[in-house]
Image 1 (cartoon, one colour):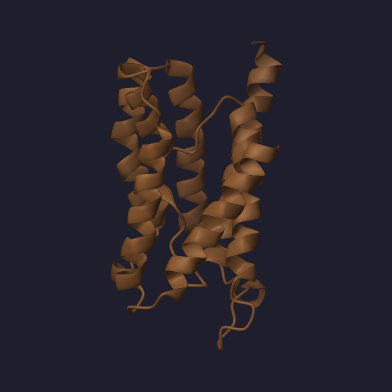
Image 2 (image 1 turned 30 degrees about the vertical axis):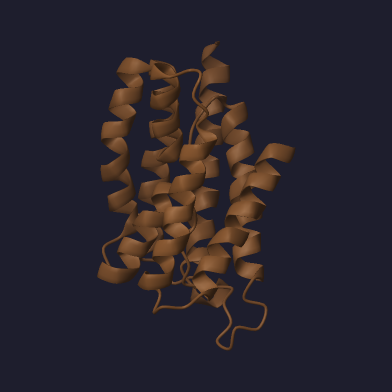
Length: 199
């Protein structure tokens, strides 16, 4: 890979990381639901404790990235950590920016599904470009890569589905024993996976 192409690849990853962080700030946090995967767990932890998801996502992804670096692919791990580090940094910075005038959320639940659907479309689009740049978004992707390395015959779809199901079920308890966050998590996951697989 030429230096220019490598620089362009990392620039695309940084732009996607910013778009995804902004996506969380505008559509996910205001609508009080957890998206899928490891970041869904981080989102719920932030909701409960107030501790920035940006820090937690970075802390949880570092050991996974190190494992992928040594066991799967150095270049893949570096590109994925570029995304994770930028995504986390942008989240921390955006926490200190007043974006409330741009939030999409409804007080009475009217059109509550629009926020998660838009968030899923944005993430799915970004994720498809990450894959084209031979990068991961961290979390479940890291875990799937490690399992596939050890057991190439084993489907990782079951693992991803299980993790997403755990997030969806847990969100019922985290968000005041309501079914709506569970449904919003499922809608987000469906939109994201549909867009990512279709591009």
